[in-house]
Image (cartoon, one colour):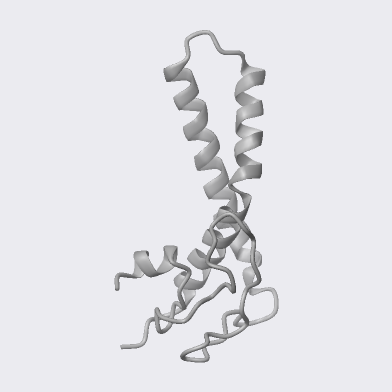
Length: 116
């Protein structure tokens, strides 16, 4: 299985088989497991490890906001800026669970090497 595929399936970065989150649903926050159920890899390597995932989350959020702004400008000629800002704010709320999970997964995958 490719690393990118296992990242978006929320699999362990070490063995790429164990589940990181207790729920596999994209639109729920779910509880994060402390260890992989297969290889027993500890996900939070040190206290405060996931503070760095905030930077990844910020990048994802700004990418979504930028894409929505550009798309709304291209698709609609006469659209108010307040409508665009409302659309962007709504997208922040809708994508929050996905953003939370993906940012934590990216952060873990950056600092964990796969076992062969």
